Each structure stands twice: as structure tokens, then as C-alpha cells.
Picture 1 (tube, rainbow, N blue to C red):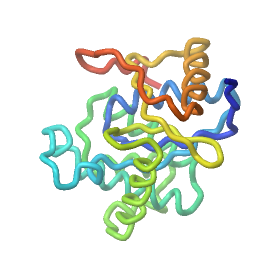
Picture 2 (cartoon, rainbow, N blue to C red; picture 1 turned 90 degrees about the horizontal axis):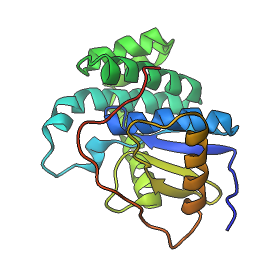
Picture 3 (tube, one colour; picture 1 turned 45 degrees about the horizontal axis):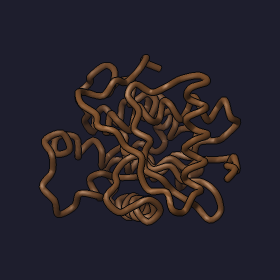
Picture 4 (cartoon, rainbow, N blue to C red; picture 1 turned 90 degrees about the vertical axis):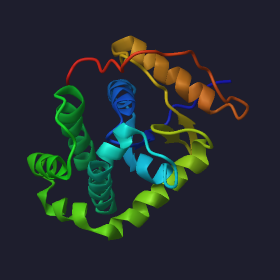
Length: 208
């Protein structure tokens, strides 16, 4: 089996998840080296856990996560994938590396800092909850059930895979080799899981 290298990878993510953040930094590095564009897509852990008992982390970060997802959906609707990437990078710096407590105000501040002020009103607009939920359902249809954030999808028709979960995120040649493997196994219809146990907190790697 030979992997067909895509020109773009759709990355379904929840911005509040530190493990997802680590994966995103790996993907940004590896995709750029392979000449692949990253398309940022909503995957809301709040939507995914509706009707379930929430962890303390998710309960505390849910208002900020909802606001961030609304902003991302509004940017995506206007074709501003570049600003989504910039927003996520700056949000990750502040929340995941600098340990700033996530809040709706932080979402607003980051949006303004990266030039997304035109869309900042979306954080209060419930109309964006529907496309967020739709994108989350699409992600689950590609790689679910029983998975979470992040999901990578590529190809036509789209194929999706959960993860990879990396801690710390690999860089340079190692990052590129991992991406090659992920693309390869995702194209095998019978492949479902490779896993080893993990313990301790996520290792984020260097602050971008």
C-alpha cells in the first residue's frame, strides 16, 4: 500500500484541549514541510459530551470553548482559514503555555490581537452553535464512535482518523515521518487502532 499525499488536511479540533494543542503543533510543522495546507474545523467537546457528566476541566472551560467555537465558525463561513490558524496559535500560547485561565474575555482579546475584530461579535451569537454542532457530527462520522479531539481528515471522499496523540509533539524529520505513517494507515479501511498507555500531564513542547 502506498500513501497518496494530500494537498490539504482538515483538522477538527477543540481549542481548549491541551492534548489537541500538542497534536496541532506537530501537524503545523509536518504539513508545512510536506507542502500540505491545514484547514481548521470545529470539533466541540461540549457538543460531544452533551447529556453526560462533564469533567471539572471541561465544565470550567466550556463558556470559553463555546465562544471560541462560534468565532471559528464565523471565520470559516467567511473563508478566513488563515485567521482561524492565527487565532488558535495565539489562544494556545496564552492558555496552554502561559496558563491564562480560559474565558470569553480571553477569546475576545485574542480575536482582536490577531486581526479578527470584525468577527468578534460572533462569540455572543447563538446562531453559530448549529454549524459548530454540524462540524462536530461530521468529524464523528469520519472517525467515530468513541473518539474525541482531534480528528484529521483528508482525501475525496474524506477519510478520518483520531489523533495522533503526541506528548511532546515531534518536530523536523521525525514529525514528517509520523505524518507519512498517519496518512498511510488512515487509507487502510481495516485499520482501527495503535495505542500505548500514557501517564502524567501533557508535554506541550516549545512555545510557538
